[in-house]
Length: 392
Image (cartoon, rainbow, N blue to C red):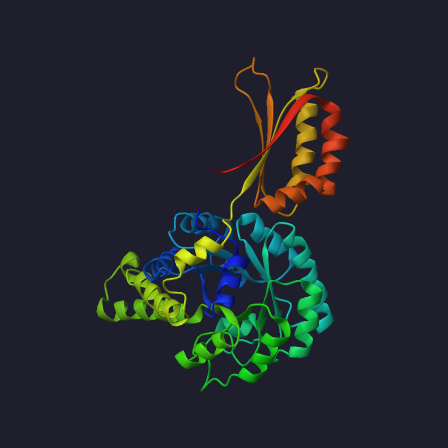
């Protein structure tokens, strides 16, 4: 149940001058460590699924575990898709269970970034999904970060941010004020004056990418200037690596499972340090009270078909329909069923699972659904009933 709307969580942080930690989930050890940290701190938390990591694990296999961890938590949790590369990847993430998306078009020209982001917002908001945009450019400085985020740092312009936020409708804005993805070289110099102008100009929650290497005082000043979400991964990877290397140095004959024994605790300790530093500790109850729960809904149709329709013809109609419906944003799954009892009132069932009530409302009016329903399905129905269901 504590899976909540991401926008509600971030806006609470923004109003109360603290920042939510959005921690990169690289595997189950990271997931468990992050969730233990949030529980220990009684803090809201965002689980970040970063598209560039998908080469290292099967996204669709990991997501059920991420969702299960969120739903069984006693603290508010949101699940965010981070640094996506396209609208299609955002739709995939929504279908898998993310309730926030960020497609990174920040390397593009301002106008192209704006139009592509607005397209993502239009699609995602019909599903009730929170959208983060990015203006300016935060580069990577070493290893995989340099490969995934090539190029030079470009600071966010407060003047451009006004038009970008108004014309895209993003819920929060990632800004570039001097941070980098990965490990910073030297002492980071952050442009707080620029950040203050962006905050005043946009009046929406701001996001920092590239938090590794910042001092406690720098984090505090960022939060004081409107930062309500901090994305954090490299430092977690570093403490996990250190845990493994220290074990190897002390235990030359350890097996694979033994190598990983300290990773969960190392990630937990670092995430817990950040959650307390950024001000989210002890806020779980008040955040839960002010956030809408995020829950799936189901559209169910029980039906009988015309006696003149063969099983092969029905299978063809439903195959075409399920392909159309499955492509609608916000549809998580679609199943067709037939009753075991031959004397039941209804012999067939169509079950569509959607990510939220907003997605259900959009589904009812979507051209693909209407085309299938009116042109293909209804002509072959003898009778039917439909029900929209949610968990109580």
